[in-house]
Amino acid sequence: MINTQPAASAALSQDELKTRVGQAALQYVVAGQILGVGSGSTVNKFIDALASVRDQIKGAVSSSIASTERLQALGIEVFDSNQVERLSVYVDGADEIDHQGNMIKGGGAALTREKIVAAQSAKFVCIVDQSKLVQTLGRYPVPVEVIPMAVQRLVRQFASIGAQARVRLQDGQPLVTDNGQVILDVAGLRIWNPRAFESEVSQWPGVVTVGVFAFQQAQVCLMATASGVKTMNFY
Image (cartoon, rainbow, N blue to C red; front, top):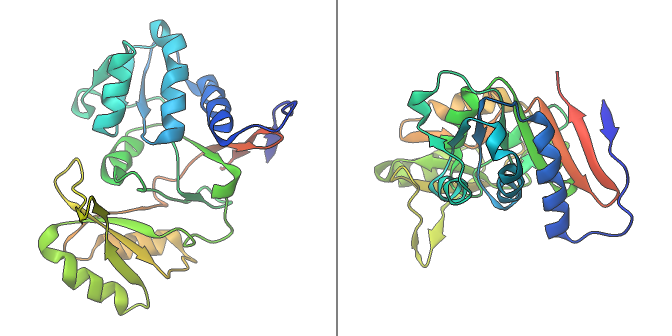
């Protein structure tokens, strides 16, 4: 079921669309509770919006160092995930989302912590723009966080299923995640069964986290479009 908020009066820029969808996510914030906060440019807009209700919430658990720093700069207390048994809601973006709420995440290299916080949360609210909606996952390369000593073996294992895995670079060197690992970006996939794919690849030795979120899928997607913010509910 899709519900549409009032249409925008004029065409909005990408930045304005992100701002609008970030503000729309405030309706899922539970007063007096600790919430989970993801990472990325769209989530940054949500964090900025969250500042307007910071006195109504207890604080947040963050999925990345960058988001933690942004939350703290706005006066929002950040808790370690081990201090919190359950989160009322987790708000995060996605690189892709399908019509069942399965996602590809990890473009910002925070997929492991994002999956941990999502697993602690009663509800996952995904905030994206319309370009992220797909029929079948795999158009965007799948990020996989891996232990460095396993990189070449995993590159070969992905090649054996017809995919191309490359180490993500930053300034010419392998990008190092907040967890001290590296990222393989895997192209050439069509993921017809996200749960089966996530389960299988997660078992490969050396894999820390695969960036397919099927077991921690979204329950709600707020999607920024040229005509406003649309809500997709997955049950």
